[in-house]
Length: 258
Picture: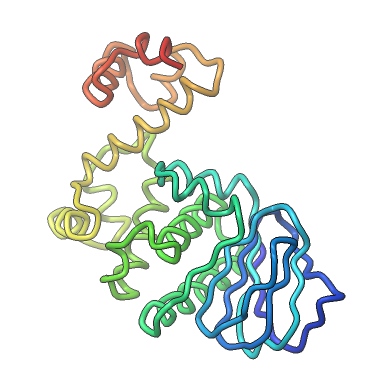
């Protein structure tokens, strides 16, 4: 579902780059020449990241001294879209686009890529990789501007928290449970989350549960009772009350809108 490989050497436009998955990125650490697409030729510059649409062959004409070639499945991309609902996220791979990274952001980007490569090689859980990729895309595309101010340790801690939350949000509501998973006290974890995400753990858990509820209501044939049970509610009325508080409308009203 994800492929990440270092890329370097001389390339001729007669030969297309191969990708295992439809969503593609070229990260140029250092190089010169052109990325050649049907829409035109784009210079390969130091610190330039390309977001490449599914359609069209990817050809290079020039030399890449150091870089990465990344491709991933639409399923992994869907998690990123769930966390980033603005049009910029939806349009990220619609047409070819690129971002030029300054030295500070480039350093973090390559550190994140190196770590992602290690996670792939160690066969990390796919839900963890989905969270990692979502963080990476949000950071590099400039959609999560607040992440730019964090050091690498903070970014890794955010990633670890998201992975734990993704795995356990349906059944675990205890602050202590997540604190132990993060190796922190409950107070320290809440202070960290408030600093980096601007929300408490309780709010983050509720947000994730309600996001899943919306997805199930929109894209499944489960009954409201079944959805409530899947999301860890002992009674459907508790789920319905929480949903109304979160969305400002009842489950029935939401279902009618969609």
